[in-house]
Image (cartoon, rainbow, N blue to C red; front, side, top):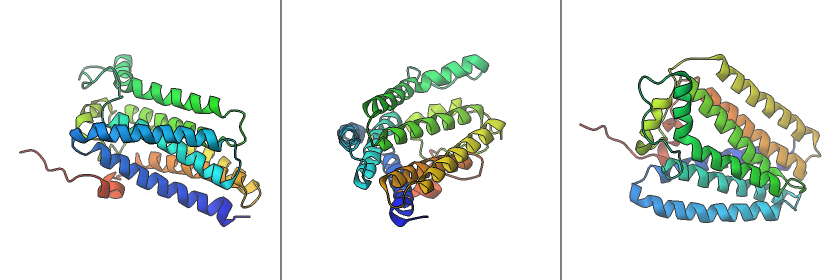
Length: 259
């Protein structure tokens, strides 16, 4: 049976967190570059608090503990996103892809453009999993790992080429990353990624409905279901003529074309 506490509220909360957290990160990373040090400092403090929240809440398999664990994971994730979009943690390559690069060479250049960011995300995911592997509440670690897997899938799809290359959120100083995007195409790999996200969302949704109504177990599975469903939605956006600014235009500055 669907319950407000165990199913509906966690999904609504996850959607709201996703919407406003993405908008906040987009706003911070599209401001003047002189504001970046302060944003990074505040994000680092928030990330440390997030790790503490996951560490404390992992011992509490309660509704409060589940929400606190997810919030902690989101704070850590936000720090990684801010450090990447400000250009502080990207990769050893900070220039456009050579026009004639193709195949394995192009792939290596693309990896080098984002390598440090991906390594940092992977280490954080492994750290959170290790920290809470035998704890009763592992929602934070699972949420972070899920976000990492879906983001990696999105980047691979964009590298191979997708119909919609909307880049409204991408700051101007990272404009060179567009040169690593594949040609617009609708490939089978995007369908596979969407199907994988939907299958995972379905499994998590089934787990949430099978858990006792209004329990922490149901809420945790519902939170993860919502993240997987949002991941599927973001992949679907890559196949549709959808602009990032349609959702987060309120957080992005008005950019005037150069004369």
